[in-house]
Amino acid sequence: MTQPAKAPDGPDHAALIEAIAVRRDRAAFADLFAYFAPRVKAWMLRAGSGPTAAEELAQETMLAVWQKARLFDPARAGASTWIFTIARNLRIDSLRRERHPSDLMPDPLEEPAAPMQADHVLAMSQQEIRIRSALAVLPPEQADVIRKAFFEDKVHAEIEKELGIPLGTVKSRLRLAIGRLRSVLGDLG
Amino acid sequence: MIRHHPSETTLAAYAAGSLPSALSTVAALHLARCPVCRRSLATLEATGGAVLDELTPVPLSGDALSRLLDRVDEPAPAPPPILNPDLPAPLNRMVLGRWWPIGLGARYRPMRAGDGAWGGLVLAQPNRSLPRHGHAGLELTCILSGRFADGSGEYGPGDLSEPVVDHDRPPLVIGTEPCLCVIASEGMKLRGLLGLAQRTIGY
Ligand SMILES: [Zn+2]
Image (cartoon, rainbow over all chains, first blue to last red):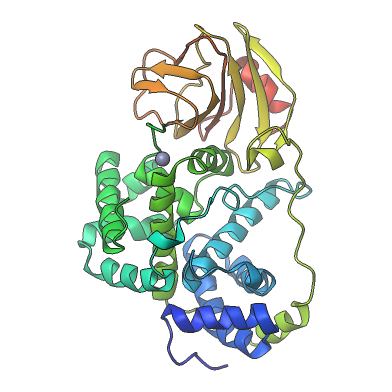
């Protein structure tokens, strides 16, 4: 397995996804797998899945990447963002299946995204690059709150407890962080 | 016009996938109508992508790729069927119970969200209160039609209510139209008529 030469920036990954969409390109898929599958597995572990579930969910995520490649729209999401949302949705789905194995449940997160106006949006792979640099220079207490939101299966009160700061402070740090990230995207609308 | 939005913590939990799906469903109904929150969500999801890039990779088993390549031509799973064509997505695909009377002319239609939080549709008559469910944890309400008012202001279609404190007054339906809204809560199991209705479909 080889690492794509220009990871982790979006354009190459977006091109790999397009190669899968257009040509069912297995070599492109292998490159994408080498980069993303171990990261998706790492995220599943950080989000609270056990090792077996994390491995399975990483594989299911990559299978969905292959199956949904035609739906990938680089104007709407960078490759990492798109794959993150697929991984996230599969994780939600697996948690629900544990409880109601026979039910087919819709994915609340799959539907609502009325398209953003493409002319107002930077190429999303550019956005990912900017977000990464912005995260790096965010005040540590803001970056901490925003990362925590992605890493642990926690909402609200639990984040409050864990960081030992009042919920109001969690919210205001998140608000500042989101505002900062939005502004680096030149996306103040 | 949308005037009431979810908090940043709720949007972040939605983006991260850590919001129970009953609550996600209510948030999704708001997001479908709120470009401001969709922008924030896009930023948060891009942050999720950046977080994924930052993580230290954890290798999969050695044959994971070849086993996956054997499966790539499997057909993609079909989306769940549309069960309630009269309701907006994602409610249209949710398993819903029937309408149950819950007093004062109000009715409740439970949904099965599947991960412990509960929720459903509430229909309440003008000048009547919406049922209160005793707050423990996060509770979200999104209006589909009609209006209500509580200590924090007036709410109309698309507005999302996320009470920060227990208001001493429950929301009151204002105007001449009945108010149809979707509620969800990660609070404790329901009591009373709402609880009976919810148990017919599960949590
Ligand atoms: Zn909003």
